[in-house]
Image 1: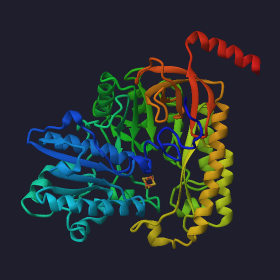
Image 2 (image 1 turned 30 degrees about the horizontal axis):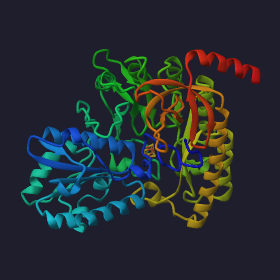
Image 3 (image 1 turned 135 degrees about the vertical axis):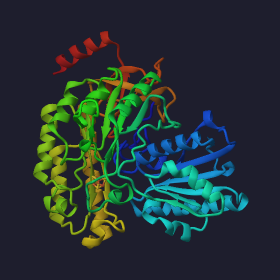
Image 4 (image 1 turned 135 degrees about the horizontal axis):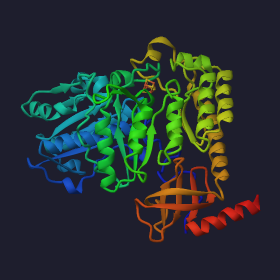
Length: 501
Ligand code: SF4
């Protein structure tokens, strides 16, 4: 029996799982170690343990790091206790995330005492933000390596082993790790992420990304297409193209002399195979073009789902956030999505209580939500990050209890909208890519529909990687629940729907 008395989805998150951009992934995934039964042995007899925090970009980077280390002779282990090399791939987006890493480092202190020869390193955004301070303050860190310096990791480890503290936090204008094939160690074998760019040139005033991940660079489209083709041949059936701002993808094709933008890249990957679904994340309202929407409409295998962060529903707040669009522009982009891709699922990010936010500005956010009716949202209250434009320019002056109250109002409204959206799907049939067993019942499987909604259905003989048509019979605010129907049954479902109407 599949239990429905829950308000979390199959991912365990209290909100839908964001699969890209720079929002942190769900709590249950934070601190996850890369699993690697097949790679437990390396050519140098040493073992590396990699723990990841933060957003999908960081988790994808850990797969690149694993690839570099494996090439250098390391096996990959899920046991920190037996590892010769312990790496934490860190996130700086919120203070809480950094505190968690510091706690984790203190836990590793015990391990280091038992095995003084083990090397401990910090990777990712915190490495970039805190640099040498980590070596000085947290005496047990031997290596600090920023997101653009992973190729230098084997050299840094050697330096650390010779007794020196090793740091490389240089940001690059070129590095995209284009030809490195990530080791997809935690994969379900069905869905995978492909990084198409790094860094960000926007300077949203609340964000650390431009400081921790540097200038925006787009990866060679040939290598992206080759990675997608390789994944398809290995049985994967869905790829998500990943970048901080995918709409500003821009790459000069040396064969044609033409600059390829994101719409061309989308089409290129969609053409790999009609059975390979293509998703992308994250879009920026200022850059999202009609050409991208038209490309989505043209290819059935490009999923009809867009994550379009709004952050606030009031133009003055958006200006203080330096988002470079206003409320009207944003709503125009939503109208364009509805025009070109009418069945598109839309989700967003919202920050409650940004610097100087008044009650009426907050009410405008709620009104915008009413107008758009998002399928899903990531909702946070503002947390000031040192070094950002906002920290330098605006006082963080909305009291914590007001931030929390506003956030609760936003969450309550979004829950209503998510439930209403799912109820509108009752009686519809969706093509679902089977991903895995349901977390709540071994008799059920789950997968996502085109609109990125999680769908749960009876197990029968279906296998991960297959597509099934599911008739939706029930729902919660986070999950659709149904049964698989055959093409013949779909006709009778359609007749029944016409009669009901
Ligand atoms: S678009 Fe803005 S919020 Fe997103 S990564 Fe770039 S600076 Fe940060």
